[in-house]
Length: 285
Image (cartoon, rainbow, N blue to C red; front, side, top):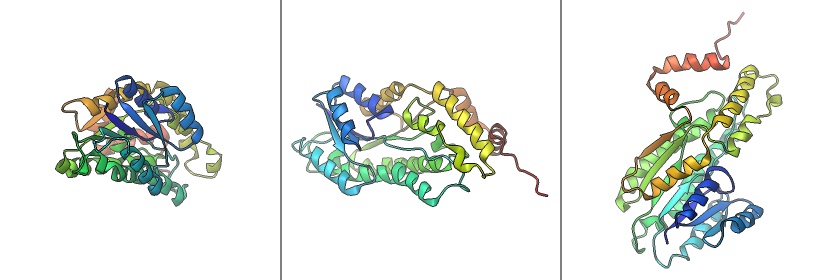
């Protein structure tokens, strides 16, 4: 039975991917941060699911989880690692504390670094293990190549994750370990539910308050029109099982708009986005 580790499985894409992979005959080790979630998911998913208790930023806990998984395999390799856990920190850079920005980078960038490093030996970097090398799936976003104003921490983290993924894909060729990046547009998951529920009261004196108000409305619309997490789960399965998966897979509820935005000159896109959010320059007296 092939085994996969997925981070952030309590809800959303991680939860949907866990269910699909279990249905397709995989054993899944899924990370959660709360014991209540571990108990709930164990009861829901059954014997072929094993919860792993760790926060992706906690190196010691992640290493302990990797040791726990390693004891199950009897010297065989892990089929896959899905770096899915992530958060969204909204707000303009002018208004955000450095600590808030750091939290975004810690979870969305350093988290995958910590987790990948811990599980690389099980994926095939340890020559003593038997079996085919595993694959790594990085859950990025269309924001990994499109900088969203008022979501700069999130876009920064996904740009960084894209660079990490591309570097690792080439670096890990030495061991035959492939790296596939999945870049969804908006998905109907709690991560965007939290973002659209942004409390803008703290930004009452910010020059960005009108734009943040518009952004909150746009996030609500994107969440409602977003892709079902099961669509992304199917891409995860494809990335782990297809003989020659694409290096980067993009999926969006508005593919034409996403495609055109990638073709237009950057300054044109700047003006379009600025008009949508009311970010045109104000004349100073």
